[in-house]
Image (tube, rainbow, N blue to C red; front, top):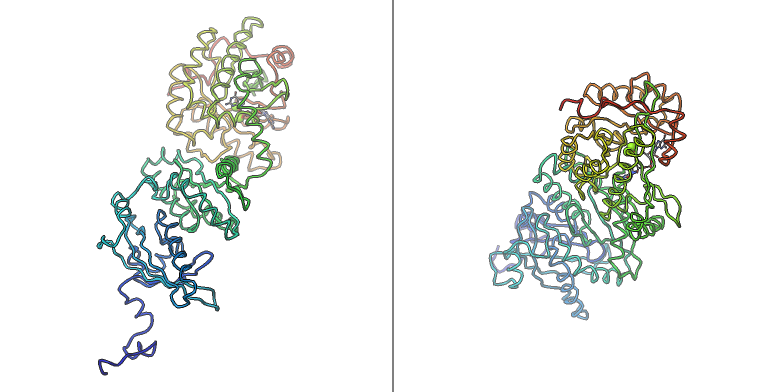
Amino acid sequence: MCTHDILLGEDGLSKLGLGLSEFVDGLPGGFFVYEAYGEERILFANKQMAHIFGCSSVEDFLDLVGGSFMGVVYHEDRLRVEDSIWSQINAREHDTITHRDHVTYRIQAKDGSLRFMDEYGRLVRNTACGDLFFVFVADVSNMTGLVPKEQIKAARGQTSAYTDELTLLPSMKFYHLHAAEFLARAAASGTRMADVYFDLDHFKAINYRLGYEAGDAVLRHVARILQESFPKGLLARFSDDHFVLITERDGLEERLGVVHERASKVMSSIPIELKAGIYELAPNDTSLAFAHDRAKVACASIKGRYDQHYRFYDESLFVDETMRDYVLGHIEEAASKGWLKNYYQPVMRVATGLTCGMEALSRWDDPDRGLLLPYQYVPFLEEARLIHLLDCCVVERACADVKRAKQEAGVAVPVSLNFSPSGLALLDVPNLIEDAVNRHNVPRDLIHIEITESSLTEDPELLRSVIGRFHKRGFSVWMDDFGSGYSSLNLLKDYDFDVLKIDMEFLRGMEGNEKSRTIVGSIIQLSQSLGMQTLVEGVETESQFEFLRTVGTDKAQGYLFSQPIPYEDVMSDFFRRYPPEAHDAPTAGTPSLRSR
Ligand code: C2E
Ligand code: MG
Ligand code: MG
């Protein structure tokens, strides 16, 4: 072969003993081809591309970048790069040969490090499968003379205010800076968009059970899954376990399905439940704050549910919001004007049929809206961190009623009080109750504390310390709604409860279901052998009550005996039908009788 012979085309390569793939993989830089429009899907990448990203194979590289060109470019540089490419190409619109561009940007390698790329791209018009970009990139990280100064500065610090340090996703600041522009582009191309708010259920439980490092690893993993699933979206971590995303509306449900499935497998010991709230943006929606709030409301509405991992915002949630505004706007007035009342639902001793206690259940007796039930205001107060206003009223009222019952009717019936996790976090509830019982001169064994099972997965660390402090002061602590959530029997060994209140769901359909009966019977045996009394709530029929008697349940509560009713009705009518048991000595189940 003479030195001046030029070997043309594929034929030439084969004469050199090379195939096309050897040629492409042998290039001194990365080479890839992607679709010029839509998803910007990468259709081909050479091995050098994988190498630049620190990936073990081209497949590994495609996974890392979510298979799209926009996943190749580091998020802080994306909009600039996209703009630059198209403005260069448009400027040469009439020059049909040189549809090309030259840009510099950062990429984030698999190990998290940032590297600088010098890219030469060429738009190739293609009628067969749509226009394509052919791209050649060189890693110029060690040749910083080629790289704009501000990029070097940002990369040296690895992360800037525009990047979330933990997950390396865009930060909230980055999101706010670019969201409007991002939406404007979508509007210009007629793409329907949606605002998505993500929240991890029970994230605090992961931190608590497995440590903060494991919690951080989960967040990083979830961030990566989101990034891979929405490479073209504007994704950011806002705080803790909350992520936000603006993305194309089309195909969203399928993508969320994949994300949910992948997230659930991040840990083998604890199922990770990633919830998504969605607000569909109208073509000219510009108020992102409005969209974001609604996506968040939709997400909150499915928190703790096992059967739904995403929800679109709809009008029914809007009704909730009107109610929320009302509740938050009037809570102080309700507290000061006595609209917040305690109703009481009696608790029966199964063996004797006598009344052995009452549960205080809050009611908002509104002058305009009538009697409101807890589900209509408790969640809003919790969310707005105002639940302590209700807690103070309930405690005060309960102590006053217990005292009145002793003085006026000569009966001492213990009252149990409900506290939400956020209430326990906001207020020193053990002190609040201690202060109230002292002022009203109420014996401590007449006030019990109910803590709902779901709060154990909200903030286990806090819960354990609060339970300890209640016990120290001599109050009995009950686990409410046992069996209603994700928690397992395992939880019983981690916490020190005096009474296990078994959720009413266990009784539903029990009549025809032998398995249900076996489960309830076994739970009752198990809790008694752990030194806990048992209370089954939601008893509605004689046959349910009869069954509870046969399996040795200590206490029962439900509509079979009474709905929650005003204090006066308990004292008069109810006690006539079901007299209260004598209460001169502390009964079993109060802390003084249990060894801890
Ligand atoms: P919970 O503590 O599990 O209370 C039991 C709920 O079940 C009550 O609803 C009660 O009316 C209802 N219930 C009782 N027996 C039966 C029955 O046989 N069948 C049926 N279908 N339902 C029955 P309510 O009063 O609407 O309270 C709902 C939840 O609101 C309570 O659940 C509790 O978690 C919360 N709550 C109530 N009062 C307060 C409060 O003062 N503070 C806080 N933080 N939460 C409260
Ligand atoms: Mg309760
Ligand atoms: Mg309950």
